[in-house]
Amino acid sequence: MLDNKKFPLSLVMIQPPAMPGSYKNNGKDLEAIEKYVYEEAEMIYKQGFDGFILQNMHDGPVAQTARPETIAFMTRLGLMLKREFPTMVLGILVNWDGVASLAVAEAVNADFVRVEHLYSGVSIDTLGFHQGQCSDILMMKKRLGSSIPIYADVMEVNANYLVSESKVEAAKKMMRYAYPDGLFISGKNTEESLEIIKEIRKTLPDVPVFLGGGATGENIGELLKYYDGVSVATWVKNGNMENPIDPERAQTFLGQCRMASEWRRRTEK
Image (tube, rainbow, N blue to C red; front, side, top):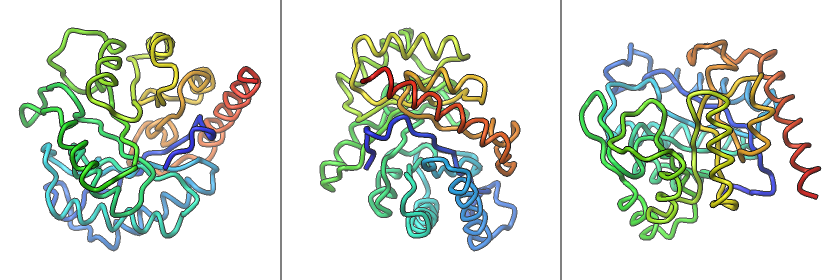
């Protein structure tokens, strides 16, 4: 479970190589992938981040319903992360299946679920229409008696949504009618991300809101004055999600996160 007293949180995406069963898998077996995930998590831990989000980003092509083997493999990886790094925050994101994400999160006792595509609404992607899963996710949460928070992306920047409303209006509508526990959201640039969060805070002051993308060592110090957390991937890996974490960039990023945390502590007194 997430503790809002520890906000803002600095999280890194762990995106293992394509797993067995994926078209993009190049023959790498699950043992080798598990080793990769462990080493990535160890680096994140040693650098001083608060946690990670496990995402099967490199599986593909990706449909909205996860395959059984994907769910099983993500569960195995999640259990390893919880066992080896029990103090780290763990989020689960199964591409692009929020129902599967919740199932994995429950099995591994994760701290939250991120639903990136698609919690509410409709979008058009490479494989066709993606439908909002909020009803199915919430019904599973009810059936399982789950207390794991669901954090939903609002109009994620890489998706094509069949709506004309603004992200701020979409966020308000999602909280009112689809009942997530928190949000992921971002703009196309730093200025837009700041504008969005400042508008959201006017009507949703107590909703946890994480920055969904676009974080860099240059902008995160300002953004985390308003956002409750961040998921970073490409910037700390020198622009390529398949690269290892650059320790120098990681420390630059975390230094700015600490400055934002201190600013929040001072202003909230």
